[in-house]
Length: 215
Image 1 (cartoon, rainbow, N blue to C red):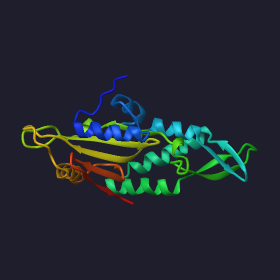
Image 2: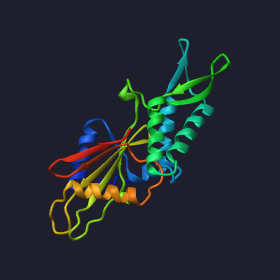
Image 3: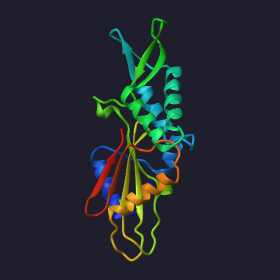
Image 4: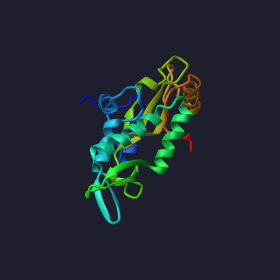
């Protein structure tokens, strides 16, 4: 598998920081394979892995989600993440994170009941999949007087929750500031990006950075 690391100093430092916290670097080709449908921002394959290891329960009993339950969760997440407009898609994703996904599930005794499936194991961080990858298609290329901005995307159980914009040097070797990352983000919003975006945004340069969140 190809492991294409971030190119810039700031991006490599940010990646190292995340890896020390337990995030796993995901090569771009592996990210594409896990996405399945290129139109969705969700890593469906990774979310499926999380759901397959999950246990739901009621009245003191626990059991794994069946194939139909997993399909219901995947359909709900993908459909809502693709809502027209980034804000609408992001709001829908945050609602699912807070409330979980309601699905019909068959109990071991054959009876059917509704259960709430959490998309993140909030009380057991080690039970989640933490992935970070480079997003070359979202980056700002290096130009003479414009710094390059490398983009890292962070996923929890396949859900896009973190976006890091890492400001590097310009074509004359001068370090950029976080304003370049903010400008890149705003251009993407103005261009009418479809689907949800990560609710946590970090704009980093070599001196520090800024953060923003939604929800």
